[in-house]
Each structure stands twice: as C-alpha cells, then as structure tokens.
Picture 1: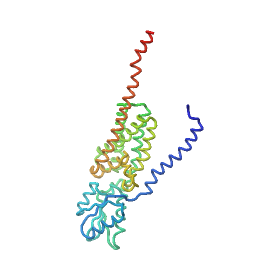
Picture 2 (picture 1 turned 90 degrees about the vertical axis):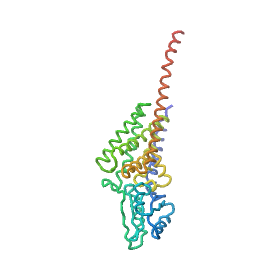
Picture 3 (picture 1 turned 90 degrees about the horizontal axis):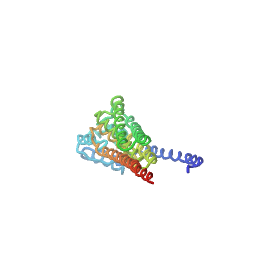
Picture 4 (picture 1 turned 45 degrees about the vertical axis):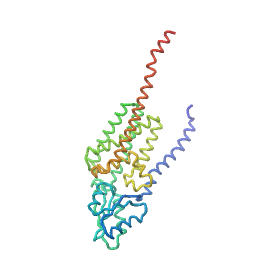
Length: 332
C-alpha cells in the first residue's frame, strides 16, 4: 500500500529541519572549534633557549606534538617530508620560525602568532616559508574549495550508474572512465589555468581521478548492496561528512576529535591530503592517503561487480527454464 499524501507531507516537513540541522552541525561545528590538537611541530637547536621553546609548546597540554631536531637543516628536512607542519629554531638572535604554508596556511599563521606572542619584548622573530603556497593560491582557498566539486562529481557518477541501470563490468568501466576524464579536466583547470597546484601534471591528474573513482565506486557499491537507500548513505558519507571533515581548508589536527581522523578515512579528506603531497611535497607522506583511496575504490568496484553477477544469474534463471516449461505444457 502506498503512503497516504498527508503522511508523506508530514514526513517531508519533519525531515527537512533534521537534514538542515545535521548539515549545520557537520559544517559549522568543526569550523567553530578549530584549535591545535596534537599538531606536529618541531624545535631545533640546543641549550636553554631550545628547552624554553619546547616547554612553551608543552605547556599547552594536548595542543602540540613536539619533535626535537639538532639543527635548522634537520627541521627543514622534516617539514619537506611532512613530518611536522613547521618548526622553531633557537638561535642567538632570537627564534627563527620555519613554516610551510603549502601544507596549511592556517597552521603557518598560528605558529607565527604563537611564537611571536611568547617571545620576550623587543626580540625580533624571523619567519621563513620553507614550502610556500603557490602564488595563484597563497591562502589555500582554491585548493580547499576543490573538495566539494570532486565529491559532487563522484556522487554524480555513482548515482548515474545506479539510476541508468548499469551493472557489472559495464558499470565499473563507466565509473573508471568518468573518473579519468574528471581528473584530466580538473587538472587542466587547477594546474594549467589557475596555477593552484604545481606538482607533476600527470600525477596530479591521477590523484584527482583516483579521488573521484573512490567516491563514485563507493556510492555505486552502496546502492548496489542497499538499493536506493545506498545513494542516501553515500551522500551522507561523501558530501556531508566527507567534505566537512576533510580538513583541507585548515588541517586535520585542527578539527575536533575524532572528526579529523574520520575525515582522513573518507575519500574527500584522503584525496585532499594526497593532492597536497604530490602537488607541493614531491609525494612525501602520500602512502596512507593513497591506500585509503585504493581501498574505497576496490571495495566499491567489487560490490558493483558482485551485484552485476547476481543480477545476471537472476535474469538467466527463468530463460533457462522456459523450454522445459513450454514442453511440459505441450505434453499436458
């Protein structure tokens, strides 16, 4: 029996405020609670000055994860390897702040302000941007804004494959082909036109394609396993939570716990982290995000292929039995 119109109207009236409330929570709450939480930073040098800098970070319990380095060269190498977001070098002329605005302009500013506020009056704090953000996107705004279009592209591909009734190998090839084309088009815009990413062109295209494939195959796989409800679950995971929990506009370690960690387990957050690694850091710290995207892609495509095989078996069964049925009818 179909649901009466009055009940459907009441359901819509009640559902919309719930969805809006959930969306406001997912987007506004992490943004309103941005603060360092076990943020990896470094202290370089020896002697009382370095120890004082380290104690200054450790006094803010739970805010920073301090790494000690022998000298400035070691601290720079750690920043380039994405081991730390920045470092402070203790020297006779005062603290020297090393930042990486390409990793997070928000963290770079936070580190500069924290060291400047703690420095004695009259001491000049020098700052060097070891891995600077590109001139086309100095605040990282364009890179942060790219997460939602990628999530929408993957969501659209997964929904289209489902609604068009594509199954099995045909669905998997459609998802892979659309993701590859999106990766090429997005790289042409972001790298060649806007200049907001500056790494190897084809590597960036592969990262963007893998991100879209992970999202699209996950959505299509959920729909293949759960039916139409899978599309809703996919939208919840990839658009609502994945986009707002990605940490691309700030840093995962600035989001409330466990939001930052959850965001890195979802394709939008993993894709953003992987794109930073290949675009600005020569692939450093790319292993974890790449593995996350590969797992989502593999599991999603496996679900699509499995559902297609089951559908083929179900469709073939009546056909195989039809001649015997007709023969029995004629004999009767």
